[in-house]
Length: 340
Image (cartoon, rainbow, N blue to C red; front, side, top):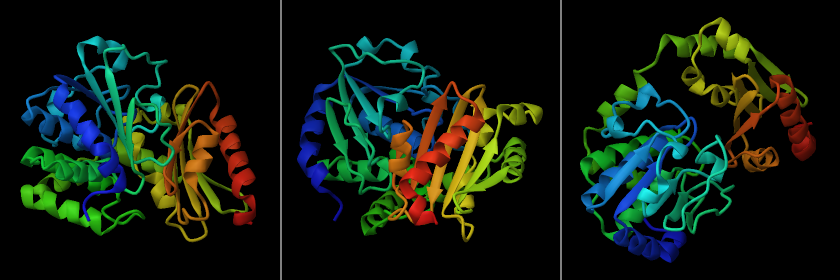
């Protein structure tokens, strides 16, 4: 019930790779969420107990304050992939990153021949870029996959790791509300709750770490909604100039605007479009009907990735207007008849 065919097939090989390693690198993907940080810190706590020297780097983006209560958060190294010596590590566990640009958007990455790369992911759009790829989109969160993986190995999950994995599962499933949640997800969460019965304190701290800037951003985002494709696609369009005018920092734009947009009856796709920096547009997409409207297909057309029900795109060297027009054109091309 806990395992999966992918874990049974590739799990033993990964365990041998980990046993043979000494220095392990983990990273956070750009604009890291609970699953990215939870999975990285959860594995750091686990691998450290296995006698490994483990480093977690923050990657491209600032660390989100709302997850600062996670154990080990203060040990995250404030560097991106280009600011460290990759040859100092023998294993890079690349988690929750469907493509190379989810390691970094700052440029092409060249791995030294001595570095073993293993991708552990749950995105259906994963490009299979690791030397070993343990990818299973049946799991709604990487942290869910990792718990099943560790259980299959017979490795004990300590309290700190359990708290981190719980945050990843809780956030990436929307509090167990999103499609993809199964009895296995609840079994893994129950196991973590047994190991760390005070997990609700971490959830409380996360939910009560909002900033004034976040609410200012949400007000701006909800006042900037436009609809497309027969009124079935709702897009919140916030420019860099808008953010600057209200002194809103980039990290405040992490709010779940797209998820709230798709909750409106009649809006089948909700999109948050934010110009985070001049010419840099971040799209976050959610849908009410992932079986008919596969967002991962839309994202792949524009260089992004994700899941059927939730996906993201990052565009550079373009205007907000041009980027939105490109997205609408792709949605119309792929799903226009469904939305008419």
